[in-house]
Image (cartoon, rainbow, N blue to C red; front, top):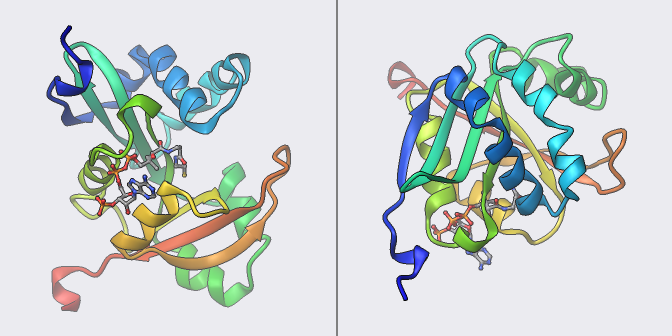
Length: 186
Ligand SMILES: CC(C)(COP(=O)(O)OP(=O)(O)OC[C@H]1O[C@@H](n2cnc3c(N)ncnc32)[C@H](O)[C@@H]1OP(=O)(O)O)[C@@H](O)C(=O)NCCC(=O)NCCS
């Protein structure tokens, strides 16, 4: 029997409309990767659709044949956005100024569990962040010795805020940041 794991995976840039078209597939992967019940994951579709209309939105997808096996996206982080305001109110003013002024929020990055640990997540994030979307990238990820944390650390993300509790989620999160210098900074 042919194993799906032998099928080649392509990582591609997506337009906002591409993500909106595959929103059910993306939310299915989000739920499976994060361990959320299906209805919780599907309820996120409206928020993700709103995210696709934010400034500097960009997305990437990992495709095997016609199947979506992973995706990631982000947008310019700004006052008035839920996540931005949560983090901004939890950090000192100097951290806000340093990290949140010219900032891209990496909002979601997920690989379907059966496809994890094969380099797809790394390929998704490096493709998403090239070309440089902003001076800084911020994200949050559940605390713990996870594959996500290893991946982000290996790319150069550092701690901005640890053990943060977002409303509606009992798990503590780490907020991590990456500074991306321009060629002129080198
Ligand atoms: C985080 C995630 C997107 C990474 O995707 P992935 O395809 O599994 O990751 P990769 O195979 O590219 O591996 C990336 C890194 O993870 C780490 N890693 C891989 N397999 C691992 C394992 N079994 N145990 C611990 N770390 C592991 C390594 O640092 C690896 O780097 P390497 O390329 O030098 O080996 C994916 O695991 C996922 O969807 N996890 C659940 C959802 C989640 O936490 N998303 C992020 C929320 S912010």
